[in-house]
Length: 487
Ligand SMILES: Cc1cc2nc3c(=O)[nH]c(=O)nc-3n(C[C@H](O)[C@H](O)[C@H](O)COP(=O)(O)OP(=O)(O)OC[C@H]3O[C@@H](n4cnc5c(N)ncnc54)[C@H](O)[C@@H]3O)c2cc1C
Image (cartoon, rainbow, N blue to C red; front, side, top):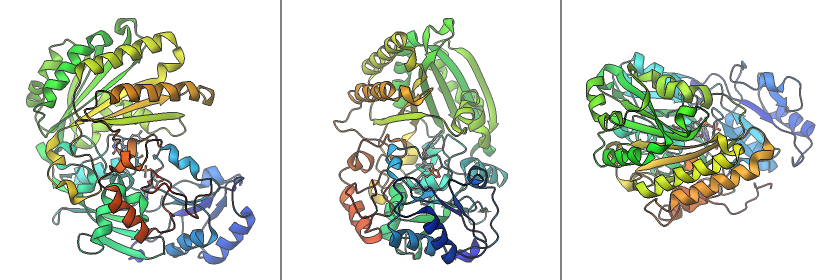
C-alpha cells in the first residue's frame, strides 16, 4: 500500500530544552534508520525554515513505520502535520518532539464513475474543490480553503455543503492508517470497523492517516452557488438575531450562512458591525428569496453573485477567509462552543457587552464572534451512533476568534474570550459546554469535545490502538499522563 505513495513526508524535530536526547544523537540515530534519500533537519539549521515546506523534494521513501517506532521506543513526542492549521492549545504540550510532516502526501485521484475521491493526508480544501469542480462532482468542504482536508475530516469537518452531506467524515469510506505499533491498516466499515467509528470524529487519536478515500456527489446546480455578503450595524443586532431564529426553523439543505460580529472603525457602523454571508447551492433567484428577511433590514454593502462552487471561500465575506485564514504566523486565541437554540435576548446581551468592552479597551478590538449555521438535513442522514462525530443536533457552531497584536496582550484577551464563551453558554440550550473538537481552545476537556456518552468507547479504542498515548496531543480522548507526555 505504501508503494502507492512515491515520496515520504519530511521528518524534523525541534531540539528544544525538554528534548529527551541531544539533537545530534537523534539526528545520527534517524540517519541510521531512514533510507538514503530521506532528509533530516535540525530546527537550529539555517536551512530549516526554507526546507521545512511541502515544496521540498524527496527522492526515496523510507519505511513509514520506522519513524513511528523510533519515536515510541525513544520516548520522544511525535506529532503529525497535515496542513498545519490545527490551533488548540493542547498542541503546546509537545516540546522537543518529532514532527511528521505529510507535505508530500498531496495526490488527488477522482473517480467520477465510482463516485469516489482518494487523497493524501496533506491535501487542502481548495485542491479538493478544484479537482471535484472539474469532474462535475462535489463534497462538503471547510470554509477555509487552506486547511487540511484529511485533517478536518478526522474531527468531522464542517462547511457550507454540510447541510447537504453532513460532516466530511460522513463521506469517508476508507483510511490507510499507520498505528502506534507501526502497522499500516486499511480501516473501513468492514475492516477494523471499531476503529473506523473512532476515526470519523476523533481520528487524530489513533495514528497517522496517509491515504483517505471519500464518497463524492454529482454537482448541485451544475456546480454553481449564490454568494451573498452584507453588513449590519451593531444596533440592528436584535432584528438580525430574530431573522436568524426564523431561518433556523426551516433552513433548507442548500442554504448555509455565517455571521461575524466584530469591531469596526467605520463611523457609519458605530463601533460594532455584523457581517453576514449566505451561500446557496441553487439558482440566485431562489437564494435571494430565502434571505429576503435579511435584505428587508436594509443592510449596507450588499453584494450578491453566482460563483463556481470551488470559489466560495475566495468570494465569501469579500475574501476575508482566504485573506486571513491562509496567512501563517498569526497570534490567535480561539474559543468556541456549540449552540442548540437561537436565544435572541442572550445574543443581544452578548453583542451589547462586547460593544461596551471594546469601547472601553482598544486591545479587545481584534475579537470576533463568528456564527456558522448549516442546515440539519445533512447531519441527519447518518445515525447519531454511526461515528465519533457527536454534534449532529447543534444549531450553530460559534467561534470566538481573537487576534492579538503581540503576546503581551494574551492574558487580557484570554480572559475576554472565556467571558464571552461563558455568556454565550448561558443561552446555549444545554447545561454542559459542548465544543466542536476542531474549534476547541483546549481547556474544555474530552467530555466537551466528544460528549460523556461517547467517551467510554473512545477510551477503549485508545487503549486498543494507542495504549501508550503516542497520538495524544490534539484534544485527546484521554488526558491522563502516559509515558509520552513529556510536560
Ligand atoms: C483559519 C481556519 C479556518 C478553519 N475553518 C474550518 C472549517 O470551516 N471547518 C472545519 O471543520 N474546521 C475548520 N478549521 C479547523 C481545522 O479543521 C483543523 O484545524 C484541522 O486540524 C486542520 O487540519 P490541518 O491538517 O490543516 O492541521 P494540522 O495542524 O496539520 O493537524 C492538526 C492535528 O490533526 C492531526 N492530523 C492532521 N492530519 C493528520 C493525518 N493525516 N493523520 C493523522 N493525524 C492528522 C494531528 O494530530 C495534528 O496535530 C479551521 C482552522 C483554521 C485555522
